[in-house]
Structure formats: C-alpha cells, structure tokens
Image 1 (cartoon, rainbow, N blue to C red):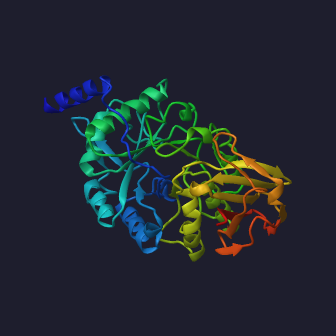
Image 2: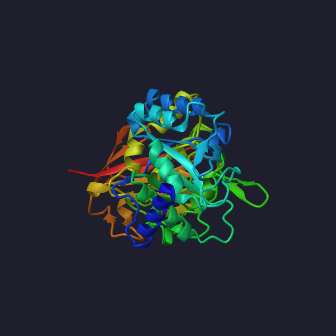
Image 3: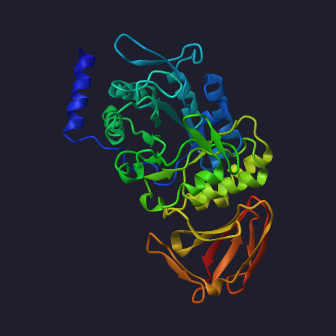
Length: 402
C-alpha cells in the first residue's frame, strides 16, 4: 500500500507542474565513458570496475572525464511489486555495490533504460514503471540516465521523456538525463527543458565515411554523422547539448581519423563520451582522448558549437567562438590525399550565422597556437600556409594579441 501511495503522490506532483529537470548539471558538455560501442551486451560488473579503474589510471579522470555509464543488458527481472533488479549472474555483488565502487574512485555512475516496453536488447523497459525505476536509481546512487527509444509503438516522444524527467525529479537525486531517440522526433525543438543532452542521429559506427546497413536501420561513420549536425547548433548551449553519439576513438580507425573525430566532436561542443575499451588503450589513443588543449575547446564556458565557414575540394574550415574573444579554427581534410592550406586572415570577416559573434582579421590581430602540436605559430598578420594530411585536421586556437 505504501508503494502505491508513493507512486500516486509522485504522479500528482508531476501533474501540478512542480517537477522539472535538474538545474546546474552539464553546464559544459558531459565527459565520460559508455559500455555499448565496445561491449554491447557482453557486460558484467568486472567490465565496469575495470573501466572505472582505467579512467583513473590513464589520466582521463584528471582530464575531465567523470561518468561511467553502463548501457543495455544489465537488467534482471521486475519483482512482484514491479521494481527492476540487476542480472544476478552478471552483477553478483549487486548494482548498489557497483555504483559505490565507481563513486569510490571519485567518478559518477550512469545507467540505461528505455521509454518503451522493452529495451533495444530485449530487456524490461521503463514504460509504465518510470517512477519505480527512478526510485530504484536514486536508491542505488545513479547520477546519469541514458533513455532509449526502442519498442515505443505509438508513444509520443516529448510526453514519454517528460514523464521520466518528472520521475527522476520526484525521486530526489540529481540525475543528468540523456535523451536517446536518435533525432527521429526533432528533440532539439522541445527537449531543452526536459533533458541535458539529446541524440541528433542514429548510432555511430567506427569508420571514416560509411553507412552500415542493419536492414531496417543504419549506423553511420564519423563524417556522415558530422554532416547530419547541420542546422542544429542554434538549439544547444550550457545545460542542453546536441549529442552526435558516443565516440569511436580507439575502436579501429586510423590515428589521424581518431584525431579528426575527437577534434570535430570537441568543436561541436558535443558530449565527449568515450566508447572504447579503457582497460586496453594504446598510448596514441590515450593521448588523443586526454589532449588538454582540445578538451579546453570543447569545455569552453561559452558553450557555442562551431560552424562550417568554407568547403573546397574536400577541405573544410570550421570556426568556433570561445570565451574572452578567442576562437578555435579547424581545417578538416575529408579527402583521401593531403590538402594545402593558404589562408590570408585579413581577407576574411567571420560572421556567426546563428549568434552575435564576429571577427574582422583586418582590424584585430590574433596570436595562434597549433593545438595538436602544442606550438606557437606566427600571428594572423601573416598568411597561414600549411599542409593537412588525408583524413586529418589542423586546429588552431586564436587569442587576441595584447
């Protein structure tokens, strides 16, 4: 009886409009790791413990990563009262013990569910059990919820995600709410007051430029997903981010492609959620994921995504406004051969197409730093001449000359 009264009270409170999303979360793009890209359903408590250990030992925690997110297939069954439990074979110590272990490392714990009757992996979904699941997550100490969109039938996306937002709020523990309906219902138009981030596309795939056809749905390579972000930057900002999906850095692409992938997600002010095996990373992968100067561009307090300024012969030029009048500039070479850059700054007046940021290089001189090579360059009074290798980037940070 107490359970029913509690759930009815939660429902009544939500209907009065008192529930909301938690404020003061994700003021900069969230950083962390998710199990799905590498492990899919092959997860257990040791995999998650190893990921937490590796996040600390690799230097990723010191670089700003904080969330360890377990994706689909952790579920056991619901009990006679409808409350969800973990799979006891995969998680013999219990989910609460696993969350406590992650917290003991100074990290935060994320979990996965689905707005439908079943998850994408066929496990119990949260449909009709939203308030019960939110109570369970709060009891376990969960800090982040990825909420998927499989097996939802004729459900309304905005209503379904609002219900879970309200449930999380009434459960009382601050939770970062990650909406994952793949951009099918244009969440950027309605999700700002519901979630802290929302997926803009279908799933990512570890390739430079491809479509992986799964029959009735596809996953997409890095460039395909990058192109799908066009027109969305005006909807994102502190506390509400466009999410082009987890990263595939360290999952089989070339080092230059990984570097370009990480760069463009940083330029997009996207959540930096790693998707590789943290316990088995090369030094090159660690160096990319922990590059402090690139992360600083992603985490800039202004929270403005980059925009594509120019594209010619496979070479794109992207500008990202930063705080304190600074700019990040990336030359992205999509082509299969190297491309030469010759950029006369004084010939360019940069106007942000969505926000009130602009720069006239004929009136203002900027100091330049090559972000990936960590070296100072000459200022914008001189034409930039460089060569960008195939499937790679040249990223500069521009600071007004004092």
